[in-house]
Length: 243
Image 1: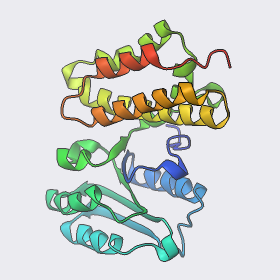
Image 2: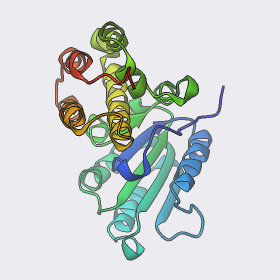
Image 3: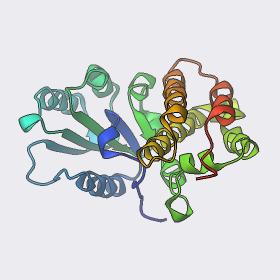
């Protein structure tokens, strides 16, 4: 099995406040330490970097994390928590809910666990999940992301891309929702990069970005319609095919 590669999955200046990375504990730790270092954040000798590695993550561990995150980083620095475990108790998860919902400004959490299935729905609703499949899917030949490929595609090709997510069976819908979440993140990054390079005009970019951000917001709702959200984007987003 290839090493877990998280490059391209995260942007230093556009981080979500909390992620769950599905991976074997040691593999996830190695990949995330490398990622965090690539952000310019030292993972050794840094008072604003916290690493907790446990076989079982108990309530006492959650309480310690809550205390540590309650203080702001030195001179406004970003604070990073890397937390890895094989199992985590319900009490520990519940103790972190408020922290994950309203973290101290500039604080980001990266949790490593073998599977999201052991996490409570209330916990999962406050994080973004990165699976090996979604990490692999973020890499395309020549470094082309899923979002870039989608923007350059024809409407028919776009519809073909979103079909596996929009037509997922009931048992597969949770994974389809996570796939859609990372797909939208990739679209947002691609649009932002094209605006920065002047590939798309402000007139094209502004409504496109608004639509993608709105889709991400609706995706976090109780019963989002992936078909409506993704097919709307397939039909309306500006094309970069002529760049």
